[in-house]
Image 1 (tube, rainbow, N blue to C red):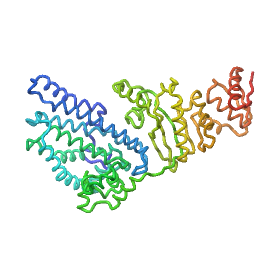
Image 2: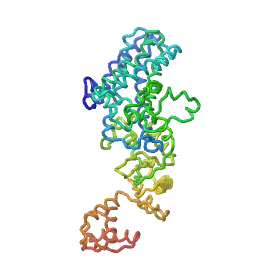
Image 3: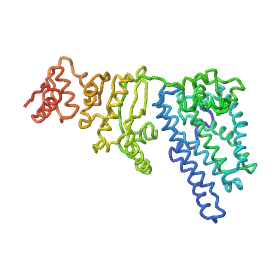
Image 4: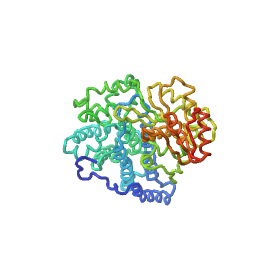
Length: 503
């Protein structure tokens, strides 16, 4: 929220949560009813297309979120080398509000403007009008309105909410207070009003303009450079008519430069072009060699787990994992993903964080739990894990953590397989068990001579007993069977005999 929220800061349906989509139900019902009761020659598809385009825009936005977070974690073309904050993810969770508002306004226009529902699919005059009016009045008025928003009065009450995100992601582009978003809608409505008033409205011009706005918004707020250099080399004047992520990133880091919407020409004309824009673009295009300190190697679990990850839906990732019935709608997509994962041979970096000077990354083995448990493709999984370990070691990782099934005894002997294959490995391979063992060891007083082991024989118990035996601490167990199991495992693996039985 803005530092000093002004009037109409909150969205009208803010308290409704996900129930806000019910606001579309009456309009969708009305459009469907009108389509069904009319004769085939009198039917208008615009009302139904509004809902279809809404779903398309939601899907494209989610794809931008997923691709952006993957690229931000993987790409060496990052612009701002910082991680997303949890506060930013929460603040930007209402990115779909502007899509709902657009649909509501389109439904109203469809009902109130005569002849609009019967708009043709294509009219070249309308397309040219949209292009001309966007490059002229829309871009020009936006530039000056945007500069006005940076006046301390409007900035503190409205625009500071958007600029709270220094490290931008695609949906940052649509995170604004309600009043500010209304002004943007008025600006973008100029081409639409011209289409209606000149009788050149078409589905291609109207919905195409919406998709163009979404694309440019999302592209410009990515935290990695994605506009190829050859494009500007082939057509140098293009730099005046298309911004880049690095261009707009400077506006979020320096605030008083690069005010333009999508066309930097007005920054050039009025002298607000940041002098380092081209330099930052060039630097962003150069791949950076990176050093990682800690790598955690994880994998997918159930078919729904990908939707709960950071690259999936934030509303699911922010809550404890549980199967959601409504996600079974995506079951075909989940199956397709599992098929792709079965033939995909490399790990993915899905998350990167910095804790002071400590650089940590999470790498994902594209395999599901059932693929581990089936035993099919065991060698392929081991090869992927081993290649990831070697890559992490090459990049300077000090610790590699094997999560979940990546360190199963039957798969690789808790990671010992990779150590044996690569004796020159510098990185330490650990898992949850070894980390828990280290914590427990640090809580045992130094003067301790013996420890009594209670409970079942688990991997953690075995690891702890071995560590204690190496320290010369006697381990006592209550049951003979447990003693035999521990002794047998130690004899097979380490030939350590530091156990005695109480009985």
